[in-house]
Length: 69
Ligand SMILES: [Zn+2]
Image (cartoon, rainbow, N blue to C red; front, side, top):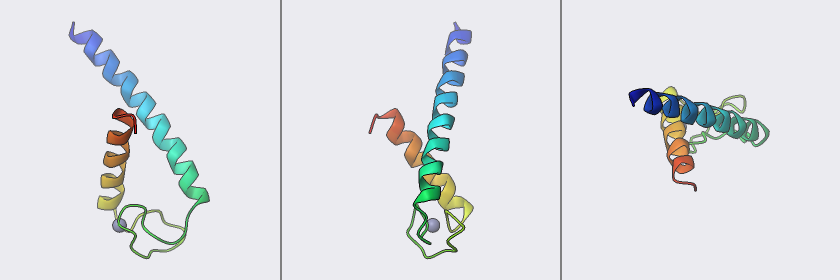
């Protein structure tokens, strides 16, 4: 029984990772020199001002996808 749960978690992770990769590609196009999470001014070559913002952003995006938003 736990194998089924483990397998479904692996599949969910695969889809989430794929969705995040697609989202990142969008953001590469839309870079405007602001952190994607807190809107702080940053180098245009960066997406986030620090690792915490990146992690929090990914958590929020993951939750949105789970909730279908
Ligand atoms: Zn930030």
